[in-house]
Image (cartoon, rainbow, N blue to C red; front, side, top):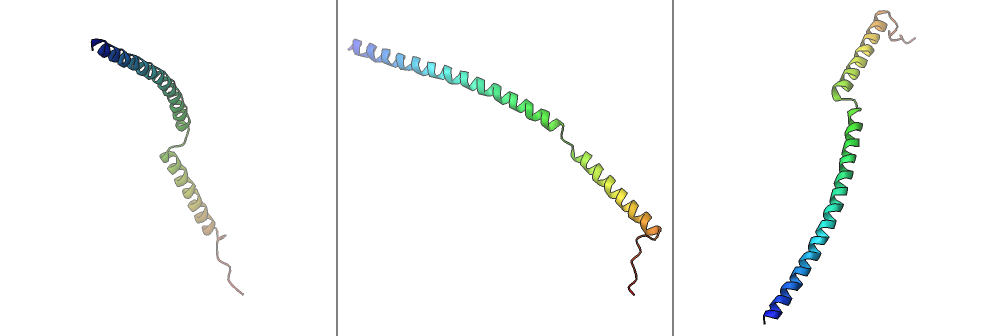
Length: 87
């Protein structure tokens, strides 16, 4: 009776050892994946840091519109934008 219990416990301990071994392997693989993820995140952060910001784009658009309006105003003052009269 005790021998059966001991045999059952030994089988359970063997199963636990196998499961712990599998967990160690899974943790090693997860560590490698985490390292790859850190490298990918650093690469992405570096790429994003070189992109223009919204304010930078806004200033260029505002500047371009200002130049266009100023050019049209000057051209109209010089009479170069006068509509042609039909004959």
